[in-house]
Length: 385
Image (cartoon, rainbow, N blue to C red; front, side, top):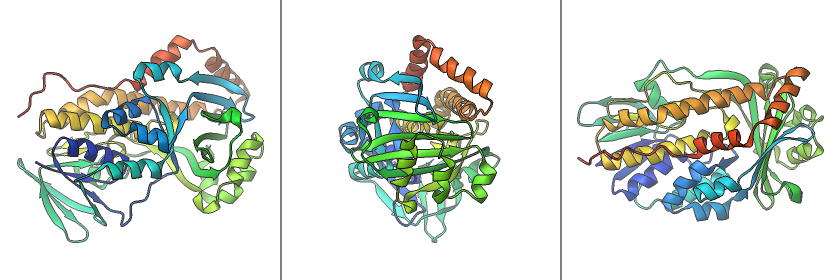
């Protein structure tokens, strides 16, 4: 059976790798004419790394990236509000959290593929389907018929617009700049991810290599950002933060700093129609406040490919959405709330927020994290056809 994947990002490549190893013929159609990683860095949490352990590429990602042992929420002056150690989850899930450049993750996935064909410069234009197959038409005139289509073409998915045109992208009135600094971070920040909450502005950073640090800068002044705030003025915007923050910005080439509005895709529309199914951001985009966007897409790739291997029929898409809906809804809602709370400006609310995080019971923290990192499994009663 031939399966077509729309989009050669992390979700599409991970899905292709699973399906290829299960013996399927896979073709990926990517609208870009050159494969370039979108974004700067990424944190692969325990849920994603379990899946890469399954694929046998976790060791390579650990080598290419940087192991993370602690997550810290801090004030703009880098005074700790809450810290979470990863050791408990490393032991429970038998893997580690890895921070890595998106380009390195993408290259590792690409180099792991052996038989999958990747077609560049193919933007989907139309699709028609019946009970047997899906016919795809691309803007370059190419047409092809395939057994199934998996759409991994992002939050502004063309595929989704064709099967679920009423899906609505939600804005957050927040804007995010991202970059990778060429910087030797002080030893007390090695193997740690920090996020500094300062009200209007927020800043996070994590080493992704010995001499590179991925950072993100978020502002809730969306209108001002879109009109006047450019990479060159970030130093002024973050002047009241700890000096390390402005050092990271200074050590990043301006051409390597990129910004985008923060949006998500709340649940409510179907992920599939007939033989076409959306995954990742095309189905359930979340804000980046939990670092789970790519991780949830990787979970999609794992579960959907497992279901297809057990029941290679389009009816599997209904099972897939039912199994994944509850978890991705929780992630979307919680991530949105975190983005709101992190930008509270009232001194009173900020004090209450910080104390709440500081006093949060360790058991509650652990239970929430274990639920997030635990994978949804395919039902055992599926039978191959």
